[in-house]
Amino acid sequence: MTELYLSAVIIKMGSENKNVDPLKNFVAGGVGGICLVLIGHPPDTIKVRLQTMPEPKKGEKPLYNGAIDCVKKTVKKEGFLSLYRGVGSMFVGVTPTSALSFFGNSIGKKMQTPSRSDGDYSLPQSFIAGSVAGITNTIALTPVERVKCLLQAQEAAKLNKNVSTTEYKGSFDCAKQLYEKGGIRNLYRGTVITIIRGVPTWGVYFCTYDGMKRLLKPKGFSKKLSPWRTILAGGTAGLFSWFVAMPADILKSRLQSAPSDRYPNGVRDVFRELIRKEGIGSFYKGTTAILIRAFPANAACFLGYEITMKVLNKLY
Image (cartoon, rainbow, N blue to C red; front, side, top):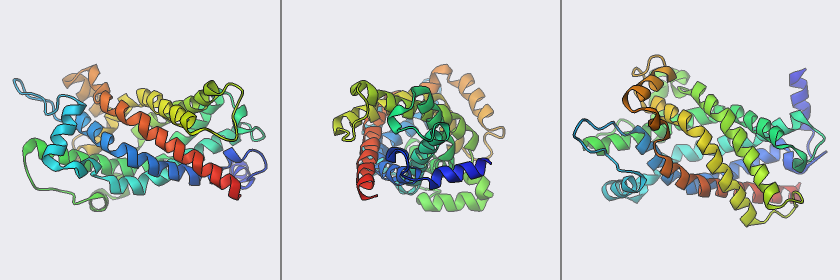
């Protein structure tokens, strides 16, 4: 029955509100993902380097004294393009990931109340719909972030140890080696923590976006969504969702960037090590870099999404 209902929801296009059409959301979400990567990858690189830098020994200074210091040292020693290290896998992965996120959000809305328009959903319903996105996007998100974290951690290790050798030559070489060493399971290491992070994070993400649109235009959703309102709503959604995501994101980054045999018990081992060695504050390491990235990257994502939806609604 569930399969039949889900199929009916997907096939029934355009009969209600065009803004919750799953297939259009899939396409528009993919475009939004491309916009997000273009704007958000450099600060994301800094975020991962801050989160995965080794704990300094007694008497030693930390590798980076914050986000700004990390940017300066990275650009000085490796060049500006090093901030886009691993961007290949992100373009390949974020496009379907973002597409699946917006697709899942639209499916979540249709499954709750198929006959309503996009503007008639309550904020709790928006949260539930967004949580569905946190599950659907895991298919593409987990291997992409596994590769990204390894590449970014590799560059940070090179900088710290002052070595020139590299284990991975790029995104596709990294994915190939991971598969050869451990199969598909190795690529999907960190799936559980990705879902744990994703469900509440994406719920907050889409709920905040819908709420901000209503707050900025109390009378409802206009057909002509102004760019500035989209930018403000999308950027705010990014900020709020990352506050929720950060602790789980730290765990995920440490797990996915570590050698396969370092944490035999997965997330539990990472959690224990962080608490023992770095304390509870480590779960919000890299906050500055995350917030610097969150607003512009997600503003760009929603702006790209809304523009694409507008074009698709005119064409179909």
